[in-house]
Image (cartoon, rainbow, N blue to C red):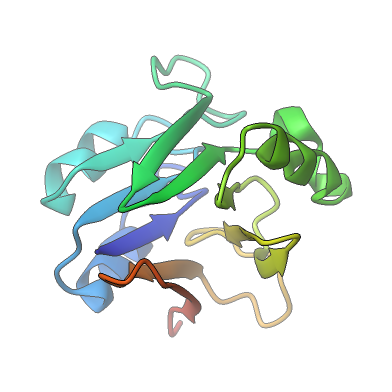
Length: 161
């Protein structure tokens, strides 16, 4: 199973379109919030099941603030992250993931990519496609592949400017 994970597009679709093209055929799309009204476009063009969450800038969105989804045999807890103060660090969202027995914790909000294995959980943030804040300021996303043997592989990818 091949999953494209993005966040913080803020209504700008050109970088999203580029990431979607680079990803090739995907089985699912996760958008971790701050579409700023772009959720209909994102769901229309991805060509697969889309899990689109509300972020702190999605004022009029009906999207959920958080979700638990099972990909293969792996339980993922997904949220934008601002309610867990992720700008101060991942500690609170990691604790929430543990309480939910998650295998994977996904969040956005910081606009900085993050990918670590912590206490047996994959903890990730794809960064921002539209407004990156990490050194080099390249838009970023994560490709996740769940193998038939349930092995999970994640990679942070960067768009060329």
